[in-house]
Image (cartoon, rainbow, N blue to C red; front, side, top):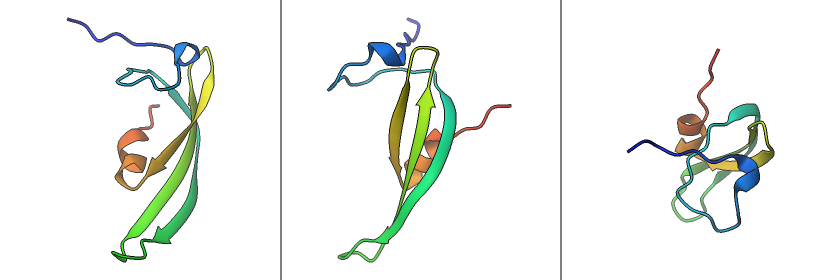
Amino acid sequence: MSTQFVNVASLMPGQHNCNLKLRVLSVETIAETVHPETGRVIHSAEAIVGDDTACILLNLKNGMIVAHYVAFP
């Protein structure tokens, strides 16, 4: 069973468990805030990613920033 990928233009609101091959166009740190109850630092970033069909704005928090941003030569 092979993994099936969809393109950005075919995404629909509420769609889950989609496999995408995307190019990272830009990543920008938005904020570093402190959670009022736990005191933990919350890192937020936005990435513009896309394929040949469209681009999307991806919101990332904490570990997702490193896990999802992998640079290819």
